[in-house]
Each structure stands twice: as C-alpha cells, then as structure tokens.
Length: 146
Image (cartoon, rainbow, N blue to C red; front, side, top):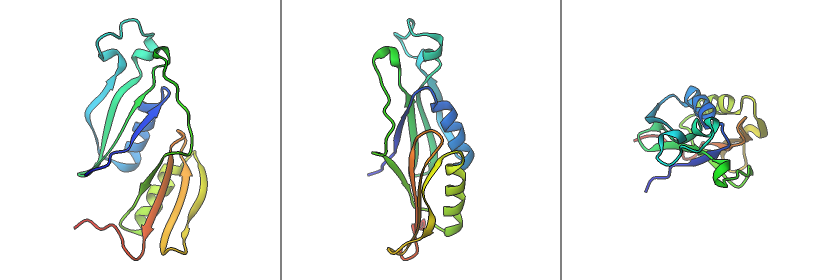
C-alpha cells in the first residue's frame, strides 16, 4: 500500500505546489490540469477555469503529494483546520532542519524542532497555505532507504 496525501485549496493550489516543488524538488507528473480543461466547464468564470483540477508532485519513487482547488460555483467549500497533518520522516537531522525551515517559511510554528522524550527530533507547524505538517526524525529508527 502507498499513501499519497491529497490537499484541497481555495484557488491557491498552483501557488502552493510551486512552493512545495521549490522545497522538495521533484516534478509535476502529467503537468497541472486546470478546471477549464474539463468538459462541461464552459459556464465557469475565467477565475474558476484557471483553478487547478489536479496536480501531482513526485517527491520520491513512493510518494506523491496531490491537490486540487475547490470550485465555489459548484457548491464546494473549503474549511481549513488541524484535522489533517502531513507527517514527514526524513533520514537525517539535517534533512529535518531543511524541510522544517523551508516549509514553515511564512507559516505558524506550533512546536519548534527539538529533541523529544520519545527519542525523536520533532516539530510541527501550519504552512503559509494552511496545511499542517509534522517533521519527525527518529534517532532510534531512522527512515533510511534500503
């Protein structure tokens, strides 16, 4: 099984994913589809036609970060909240620092990166787009690619 986080935005998916690409690197798989590319969207406003229908950022062979924008005229609403975190498990403390510092830029830090009682170097934050992240480098069981 693979897990691919899927995020929803209110017109900020393109901006958010260009930002995430600047931190993670990787490539957009299949480009960035817009709502106006889909059949039956002729009556959408120009702004809604330009919203992202789907984007997939390949972060590694096993992980894709995916997203789309909501379409308010179709009855979609976005509620930002802390009910969804993306938990990243880097292979080194240095990589944890790089990811934390990059992704938290312009956001709100909930817990700074620090050593924890459970044997990890951990921190959490909400990024500038309202997405919640956890960075967890486990000293005892690092996620090392084999």
